[in-house]
Length: 115
Image (cartoon, rainbow, N blue to C red; front, side, top):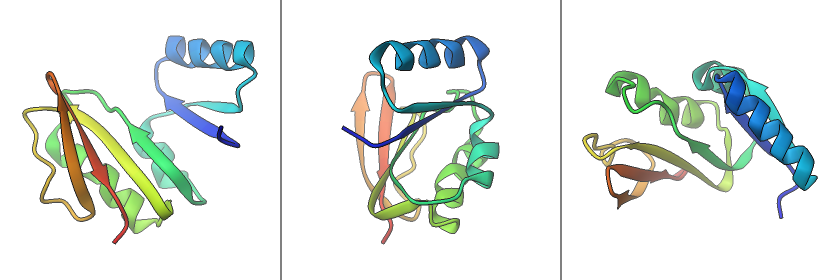
């Protein structure tokens, strides 16, 4: 298991569902109702895994800010991983730190590591 999970979402229903599920499972999940970009800009510490699933209609210029902020702020632990879910119509393979992409139907998971 993990010592702590931080879940960030803007949708009040999702936040409530995650918090309720965490309580039922007695899982160490801290739930924060906030925009992902604003959270990342305020975040401190090192994370082993950051999984981001922004809206699919997020413009490319906004989407690429996620790995940029994570790298600039040094939010990944030395062996940490950023996993960014996005539409198959976007290609993030040229971004710094990109290590691989995996396609699942219309979705792609792009993996980033500190180099």
